[in-house]
Length: 152
Image 1: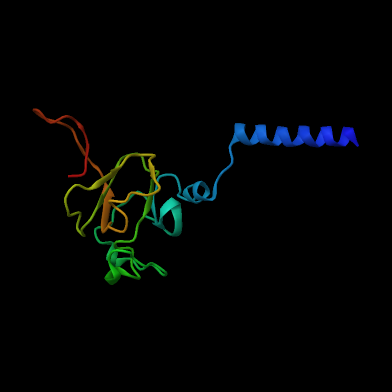
Image 2: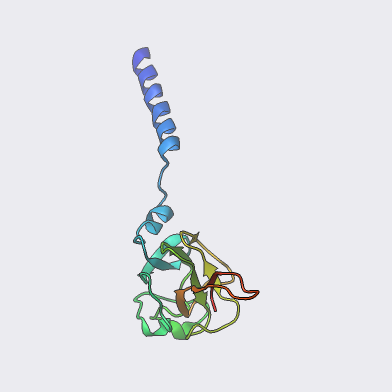
């Protein structure tokens, strides 16, 4: 009986150590992993839950043109049923920054810039505000302009 308890305790301890070494994927992390490499994905709810949109590496000037069954906005009831003003979490698996805009046609002030490889599980300022999205534009630099990616 004592041997059985000792073996059980050792196995439990080993399991805890292995979980710490290899990690345990939480449901939120698992959902974020559903975003394919080379894609920009966003979800209706925080922590990568609810309906997901996979944009790929492209852009979308007006998310109101994209239907989303089950989408309900906390800020814009007129957008219900579309992806406009719906995103609450984002994952950029492309090779360059992506810019999120509050208005269609890449408009509005101060877009949200999501770096390559970055995950954003929730952003209170941008919750249910995204209306258009595109990859950042590369500027080679000239004069006093430093080379790099920009949302404008």
